Length: 394
Ligand SMILES: Nc1ncnc2c1ncn2[C@@H]1O[C@H](COP(=O)(O)OP(=O)(O)O)[C@@H](O)[C@H]1O
Ligand SMILES: O=C(OP(=O)(O)O)[C@H](O)COP(=O)(O)O
Image 1 (cartoon, protein in one colour):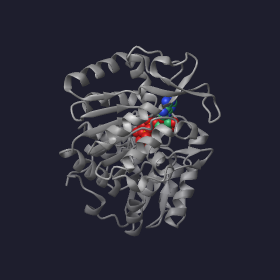
Image 2: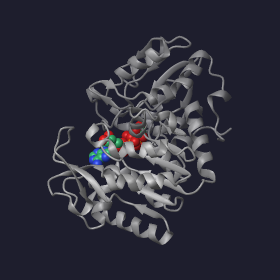
Image 3: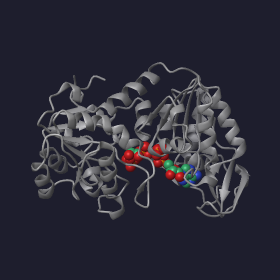
Image 4: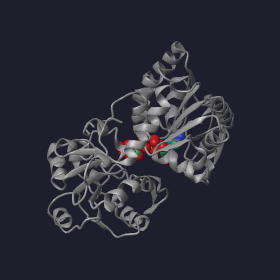
């Protein structure tokens, strides 16, 4: 990467505003997957060991500019302290007099975690006033939040306008590994897209169609495509205004000779719980008041087969609601197929996809687990990431 990293600057005695992605899966205040916290440790440890005063900032969930009690970063600060083996100071705000006072009291090597930056409306608007508040806390900006690098927000991009800005180790590693895999991809090259952030992800398909040989859709994303094929989808997740786009993508794929895979059967349920009634149905027989929560057995076989015959697979977004065991089979089938294909280079992206392979005990069978889902997809599309472009050049 042609951007400066923390290795290229002197951090001793400096107040460092370090943006990390601690947007971890959490249930009832308990962190269910800490991949993203562990991934940030090398940068945090390096800064602390080299005498920086480390001010960490992260978003958590999507509180939309308001304080949401369940989305405070307090449990993350506690777990981070355990992993670092030292006390992590936690402020209940992300800027202002209380934070300034806490920072003024820091010694070299101290680590402080600010409150969820998305509690402030200015964060997602990339408001210069908020970016300046963040910048005023520090002498140096370090961006290690690869998972949020596709967002042009005050703490991921705006702040870099006001103080020297460099990358952390995780950011550097992600860009290097993904760049290498994609510069001259081994073929067949397959992208698998699933999950629930349909609006975010559907757009990337357009550019991916110029790069891949196979495009597989699953998870919540699949139903907009199933609907676009003319089927009824009951209560399944749908982005109504993207149906035409979905149609267009399937048509473009045909023209470009890209194999486009949409589920042929799914698991439907009459409720969003492990003990809901379920049925495996063909996509043309989805009952009107049931909801699709996983891909079905035929689809699992087809997808596993495509994976086994691929040389490079990029996977972002689970195939179903894998957190509930009843709907985890599709995601598990994809993870198993990747694990059983030693000649397939596999890149897993996204907080929940990483959590899924971790849950199945298959994480060490994957070639690279990226901490960014949307970020790795946008990087793959060839887009410049706002969290990277503004860092200082070497
Ligand atoms: N059919 C579905 N209906 C509703 N939610 C789904 C469905 N399939 C998967 N999901 C949910 O999608 C979430 C992950 O989506 P997303 O955030 O887009 O993935 P990632 O974090 O890997 O980028 C999971 O919590 C999963 O339960
Ligand atoms: O979890 C994240 O993205 P991902 O689900 O695409 O991996 C990042 O923390 C970004 O979060 P956002 O999609 O709310 O901006």
